[in-house]
Length: 248
Image 1 (cartoon, rainbow, N blue to C red):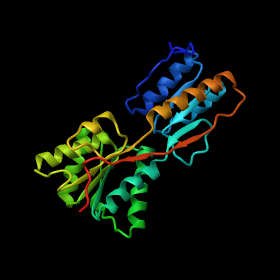
Image 2 (image 1 turned 90 degrees about the vertical axis):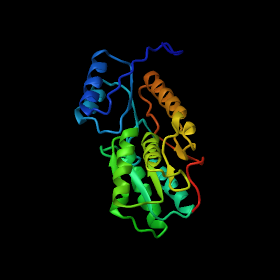
Image 3 (image 1 turned 180 degrees about the vertical axis):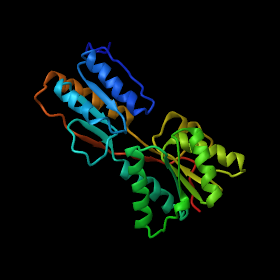
Image 4 (image 1 turned 30 degrees about the vertical axis):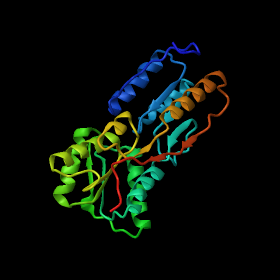
């Protein structure tokens, strides 16, 4: 029970779209007052119809920045991908690999688009061999980096989340590569692990606390004032420079 007197129910879908739909149905069956949906997937269209028919207010997190949906809270992943890549370019890197997701995550696609834009703006060509995918885990990052280096040797890697970046660290360790002397690595999210890697990981920080606070306040406001439209929020990201990137 939180300070506003509401009971909080958490459902973890493990990125399973069918499970997401079932959870929403179950929560509606339990007559919840509102939902915060943090999913990069497209939920089935009838779910949105059900939410509207039930007049159940909901907040969407991690959606496309160009979606025109009331109550959408997101970060500018495109700008974040551009920011990460620009940092590496400014350090003199021209052969920059990127690890994306092997699933259809809007936020990762936007980061990838930002990477391509930054490379194009710098007049740098992007080899298809520099673009590899994996699941969003440390093992996924390790496997993706292994494939990347089997195709070409880049001087820097942009991992589109910090867990995958940690997998890149392990690959570098196994191959005797020193970070950042032999390979610069940049991540995305700034999870707690990032500052404790050796060297600490340069990354793009998401304002996680602000996202949660805005979502809760907006949803509570909609519950209390159902006729008022909920605003959309697009939040800025911050480049956190640590020890995993260096000038070449």
